[in-house]
Image 1: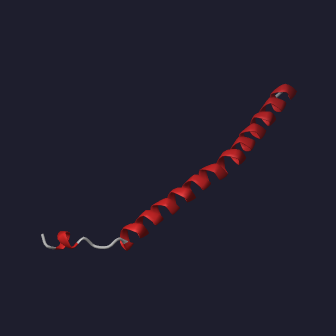
Image 2 (image 1 turned 135 degrees about the vertical axis):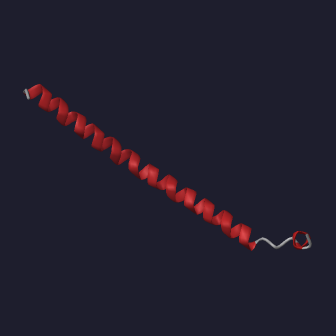
Image 3 (image 1 turned 60 degrees about the horizontal axis):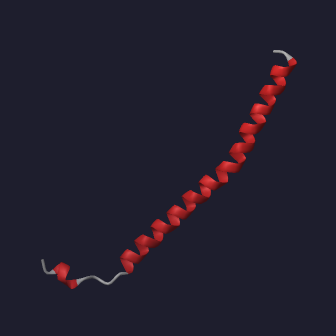
Length: 57
């Protein structure tokens, strides 16, 4: 491996790690926000009053 190939590979690895460090927290934040929204939806549905017309069928 020549010097220029080594430098190019080192920069490529550095950019890959830098990109991952930028993207990974945003992916995790999106997952957490989705989980919170789903949980809030479930809790709202379970707290909603029952429709007695549904029980008469």
